[in-house]
Length: 383
Image (cartoon, rainbow, N blue to C red; front, side, top):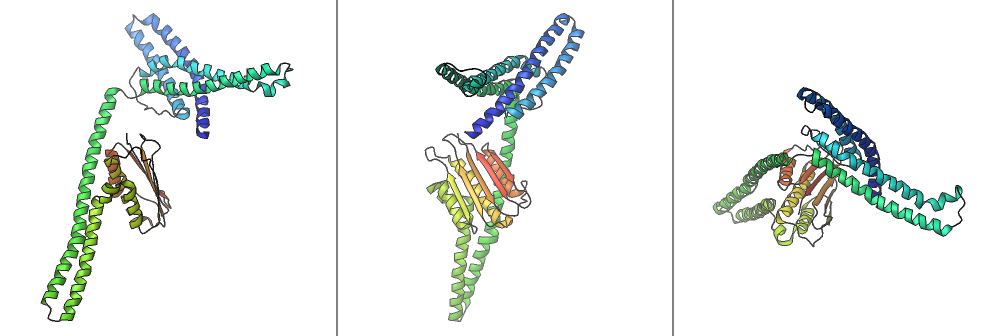
């Protein structure tokens, strides 16, 4: 509720500023029309006037961009096609004046709604019931005006995106580039993962199996029964270690518990296997199950982030949270530690995680100032 009130105050300030700019834009529209009317049939004069009008429109549009970003949380690119800024200003000034009217209604509602509190200071109140009714009407007007403030702010954002946002062709080109980039990043991440698995098998499991074979061979050739028993005992221990390493490699490829019991159980297993204290907060409603791809990416982001913390951060605790506000909302995950910080987002491990998230059109961020804490966040769309 507090956030809504604060946002409403910012919207009201933005609409108040927008009313002033709307008056300037109205005069700009009148000037542009009057200046172009005499030179419509004169190409050279028309081009000169259009250059002047375009320069004025550019300054006013830049002012509107700053206002939208500062007060209404609407971010627009600085580059847009010629003429779109002028068309935006010509279409925007009626909406700006409407915002001024809504603010005027809000102020009127405040005045009438609070008149019962301060009216007796300026005039005798002989009909208290009538004053109370007018105050209630003022409060109703204030409520409707507050709704109007949010509505006009929403219309401001839609209008600006329509005229100043990327065109459909630009959006398609951007999407194609994004898909090509994420595909290349995913292929690189998969290739890195394959090399890591090969390295783990070669340096870990294979070496264990070689040592196991050597111990068994020495036990077979031994003439001393006691020495042969000791070698067989060592071979048994080595086989258990090889089996444990093979299980770890298989777990890193894809844990079976993720398919059998779901994401929460898989993350609880990560918490149990982690040598540091790990607090898991899993707040995901079960009414809308997560897609298999979302669960897989979320698991690997958390697992790899926790592994990096254990190996490199010098932390004493880890906090992992996964939240989802509504059934169709995105899955938000956060991994935080109290280590030394200074993690490089462009490092191989974090880059691979970013590629996995980007493959689902998600967002990935790392905040790790020197001295810590390090916070890894990701947002995965689920709809």
